[in-house]
Length: 52
Image 1 (cartoon, rainbow, N blue to C red):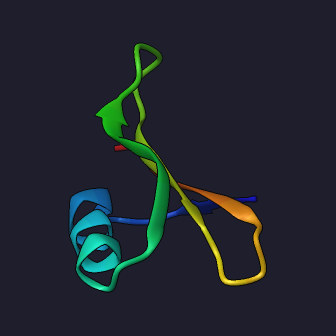
Image 2: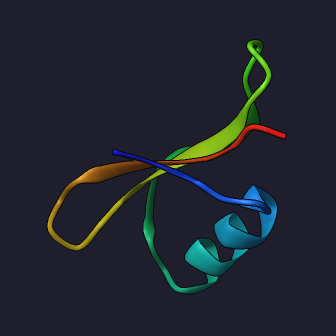
């Protein structure tokens, strides 16, 4: 599952502060997106991404 957000840095900070299970750290990908992956409470991996 992917969720596009306006400010991925702020969402990442909020997730880390809340103790979320970050499974792929925030980074810029070579194809022009900034993203991270987090595991939700049910175990689903969520791709949180900013395409700007």
